[in-house]
Image 1 (cartoon, protein in one colour):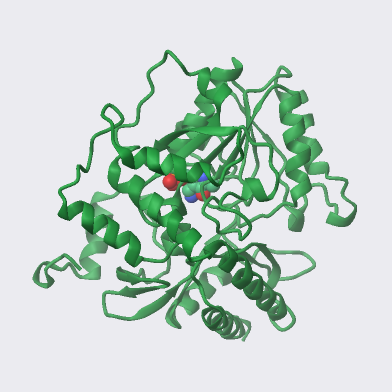
Image 2 (cartoon, rainbow, N blue to C red; image 1 turned 90 degrees about the vertical axis):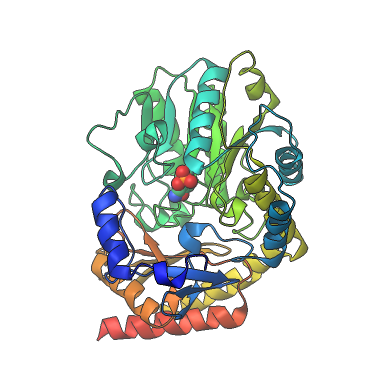
Length: 440
Ligand code: PMP
């Protein structure tokens, strides 16, 4: 820790200063908020030295593991050498181009052109702008229950009332029905639904646009929405519709685009999504503030002649951290590990359903797993308070997990991709014990 101990603020002081100086949207997990001060691998420590298995990674950002030695060494070497911290794309530097080259090894051949940002929101903003420029259209189709960021255009495309503000202008966007199998908006079941939700994208275009669109945006697993994980066919039907109506398909891989789902670095490749743009952030930087959008040559060409700039977006430190993170993911075969340990964990969670009646659904891919809690499996009444209680109980037992879903009733599990089976066993034990306590 760099703060000298004598200057260390107490937890109460931190909270008081947050209340005084932060806007009130700065919420915290847990009734008794947790202060985290140290992190290594899959673990984090609080200010009293208590150790936790970190199964949420801040907010789905830790892929290679906290403070990975190779990432740390690269950054320390840069600091030791007085490597330039900020130069912007107005000067040449090798770090961002090396990152673009590394990422392209994991992308379909048609996605070639990168624009790096500091966040996922900015990556999606850039994607909307590029789609609108390339098509000459303005309408963007999003999905209910989606989340794409906290900036103006991204918030306008957000499918959650809790995240939207009264003043949020919702211009030139429209929403299609959510592909949420557990709570199908068409009251169908996956075996015989005929992909009504995918077809609804066409109905939405036909009924709330002039018949041409700029873009469709969707997360391949809906993160904030509660790890809603539609089947592969959904995306293929939708991509065809989007292209038929002249739109660009934006695959928002801010949460999924770091190998987390266990098949490829970008889930769009594994699901064969014919994306025209992919956006990413979070786990890409393993904790660094970096995001980016990659697009086709054709879309990039439509931007030529304009100025578009992001002051910090291609700076050497975050772009190096992202490149080394991907190298670690490759060298340590972390995508495969996410698949193997993720399947093991998912099986274990499904087993828990036999005895733990609060679990309504277990879903997700790789190490991006959601547990939807319901008070009654027939009525599917949201178990919102129980989910908050479960998080608190897990924390008391040394396990950090997140939550999401429109009603905050989905426990979210997104640990570092280095997670081991023994750690998955620990998770299962803690969740099982905590659910039993709640059931009492
Ligand atoms: N897209 C998705 C799918 C996200 O989950 C998030 C963040 N939760 C964003 C975009 C926005 O990313 P950021 O907070 O880095 O702007």
